[in-house]
Image 1 (cartoon, rainbow, N blue to C red):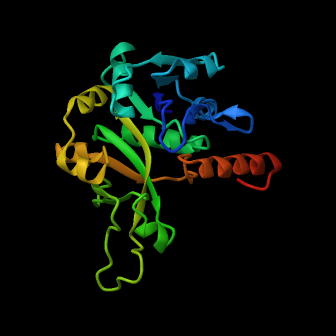
Image 2 (image 1 turned 30 degrees about the horizontal axis):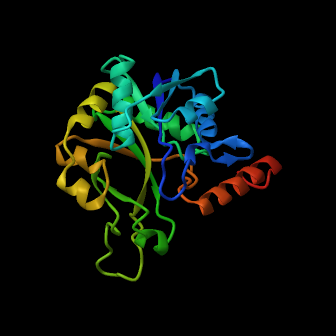
Length: 253
């Protein structure tokens, strides 16, 4: 089994859902759900990277380390890069960036992205899933990815890609939705955070485009497990609580 660390960026402030990491799902904070998923996936170390002591005080898992990071970071990746420096992770250490708003992230998916990076020459890896329907294909909040024949990312976009030129009424059967889970080697994580934001990254508001614009490859594989949609809004939180209740009663996977 691939040896990996899971690092979870957790920012207290959120425009659409203030205090999101401490939102309750089934009576348990969201950040605790995420940390438990990381532990269940077999990570050798689970680290919460946060800038707010309320998150530190709320966590009740001895096996999880909380690192208080700078309040000035622009992204979760920058927060994890600080952890890589402070915790002295070795250059080749595989680090999985699991978002703090993914309380139902499948353990198989967490392991898969780590194993994908381990088997790849790329410094960074991520996952995707087939697009389900036309609405999702055209939704700018559903990030799309197209890959080369060897599985490397060609481009990520909020636009519907690849575009079916000969039948614009139908979404492409080749379309893949990007899943926002990443694995990096620690040396690249630190290098990536030092790169300035690129023009395509600013245009699409997609941080991973910084790697492509700077000539770094990103390995992409189709996830073997479905990733439920993360929690960004109060409505998402309601759905998450319903999903959790259904899981307890056996009416949902």
